[in-house]
Structures are given as C-alpha cells and as structure tokens.
Length: 143
Image 1 (cartoon, rainbow, N blue to C red):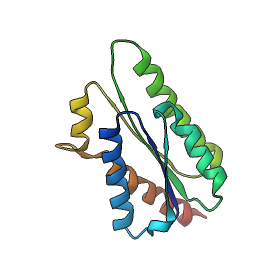
Image 2 (image 1 turned 30 degrees about the horizontal axis):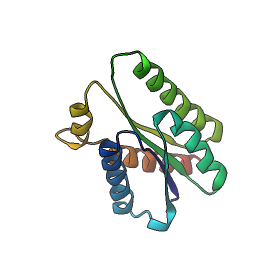
Image 3 (image 1 turned 180 degrees about the vertical axis):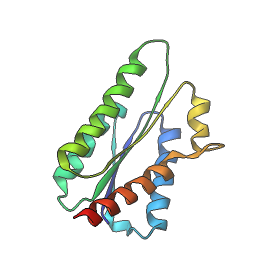
Image 4 (image 1 turned 90 degrees about the vertical axis):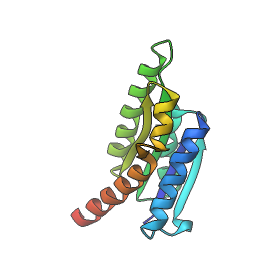
C-alpha cells in the first residue's frame, strides 16, 4: 500500500502524537516506510486541499489520512473549521474515489485532545491508520 499522511502544524503537541501513532500503526501492518508520504499544512482547514495535492502528486497513492486538532475557543470559529474540514475531507475522497480518513480531533479542551492523542482514551492517529488500511482493502476487494 501507498499511504499519504497530511498533518496540521497547529497544536503540534497533539498532532505530532497523532502522526506518530499513525506511522507506527502503518509500519506495524507492513506498509513500507518508503510508501508513506508525510506532509504538513499550517492548520486543519488546509487538510483537505493537502490531501488533494497528495493525490495529484502521486497517482499510485491508495489513501490519505488527515490529522489535526481543533479546540473550542470563545467564538464560533471552532464550528466553522470543524465542519469545513469534515466536509472537505469527504469531498476529496469522493472526488478522487479513494479513502480520505478524517483523523481530526474536535475537542472542548486541550486536556481532551491530549487524552485522545496517546492519553487515557488512546491515540486517534492509530485508529485513522487502521481505518485507511481497511478502506484500501475494501476498495481493492471490490475492484
């Protein structure tokens, strides 16, 4: 398999942990290191475009994992960003006909994000990597 990971630079303590979880899972399931392309984007809003750019750059790419973290603040910015990223990731997957996994934490607090990026609730990067592998398997099976 060839898998892309696009990761947000915003909230790096969280997103770096998500990335490491995803990488270790992909490697653990036998994806070769040279078949994993990791690229960063400034924030979560840029994840869908980053995913599309990865597909455009490598026609052999089987799927992309989008990793980010949006934490609720005092304004509605959280709602707009979260919805835009979820919708954008889904659109890229549908447009390219390949798995695009939404590995973006949308939390009320930094503590909740840390709990989900290697803390007491596991690492959602691991779950995103497992999900992309399952979706790639399904796509190959159906072809």
